[in-house]
Image (cartoon, rainbow, N blue to C red; front, side, top):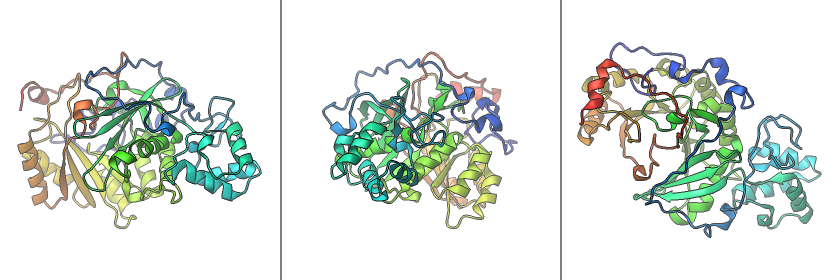
Length: 439
């Protein structure tokens, strides 16, 4: 329970329930965003202050740097017909366009007396054709009366751009402000090849309290809506396509546990996949989880997107069972290596045994340090040795280098805990020495 996402030491057994560190039950995991359990905490986000940051000029990408945002609020009646999951803004209960799937948008457009073809033209201007419209003035080619109806009944933006920070390796961390004053972070990871990835957040903070993850120090503030998730990808393309090339991949590996917010995550992926819009391939959208078993089963049944599991010895039997019904589907296992804790030869052998029989690939990730963490990253030499042992055991395994870690943009470094933080858990005796000595 101490490590949450780590493969445990000897005698550890698979656990088919969320860890006690999460302070959650299956019932609370399924509660909607309107539940008092998920009521946002008062914002306590102090400004981040690194003097060597480089901010994107507000003159860049005018369409993507508009003033005050309006976000979707689940559970509030909209012009589309009440509490049906379609997002609305706070201002006059206008419907938030990016909170709708294409089918929902088409029905909403028809409910205002316009033909379905107008819905398709609007969809393309929201997500395709290099327009990425953030207000009605960017809807060239649409009927004047239709544009007027949109300006009176709809809102385009779910996020407000706060800052773009560029790391030494070219990774960009984008900070967005939500309507309630909370801040989320999105990362764009460029590549020398044609693969450019946007790493999106699914929650403000995270309830999992993984002891090696900075986001977990925040606790869970609230779920993100589908519109707030989708618009991270829209902004990434709008802001950075001209600099890094087309954004080809989406990974749900930012702030939060995606499967705890499974309804909005599934809806967001549906919007991202539409072939007349953002048009991401399902195999190029990867949803990561720490292993929430009921939601994991649902995801495998309802989605064709890729799945990544942070290893904590909780989901191996579940995956074997569910993957029997998925053809040519491989799970990505993510294994964060911590010096003296889970990087021994014995750990490598146990890991190989754990994934035996599961169609998978393994990513070995270096731990990325952050304030308050007691862990140390495994040395490069030991990571290579660990990888070789897995490869000899027949595993498909990769070493993944950290990206953006000089600007707190790497895996496990996102967020700003502020004054209210989740508790640090007691370190088991067998790991204390490893935490105190350098590698």
